[in-house]
Image (cartoon, rainbow, N blue to C red):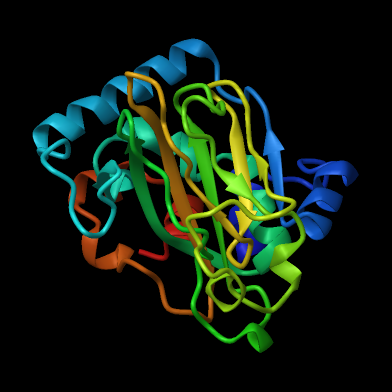
Length: 249
């Protein structure tokens, strides 16, 4: 099955992305799609994530990997509730716009801890810039993304600079001139190029700020996680052939 056939089978058409969204992806390196999920769906997803956090002891003292957040990896293999996120037509259309043929690389729920969550400015891929765009990240917001809750900061246009934050910033934890916060209500989707400078910011609230991050890679590139090796019988049985093509498993 070709990527075009898979996308058509999952509801992606030439009209899924309008010209404004395509321009934002090309020029700014990210695009925001507010309120794609209704309140009931968001509440259900938040409850599923909270249950997984408890089951996996994700709120134990932070690790070196991401001490400011509780993380649950591979959520696409941990319940049917998450399927609608990684095969959503808008998300898939964005990935196809950036990457052409692509596959899911990883899917992680990240909850910024109260009083924590600020990250170093970084990019989400480590290959050579000469290879072109090889990866793209995305976030489904399960809480309101605000300055107080630790909204993701991005530097518009930085995906075209062919350099990384650590090449220029003496302290990637500090603010960068021109950075903006992606603020939007729960249920919104943000998509950002793998080479866009970005990071989480401080959650100053008393509640966690949850999101589900899905990274996709170009089909000729390695993936962060081996999806074929992680899939179980229940997941395989419920997925359609087009979805299996996106998972490449």
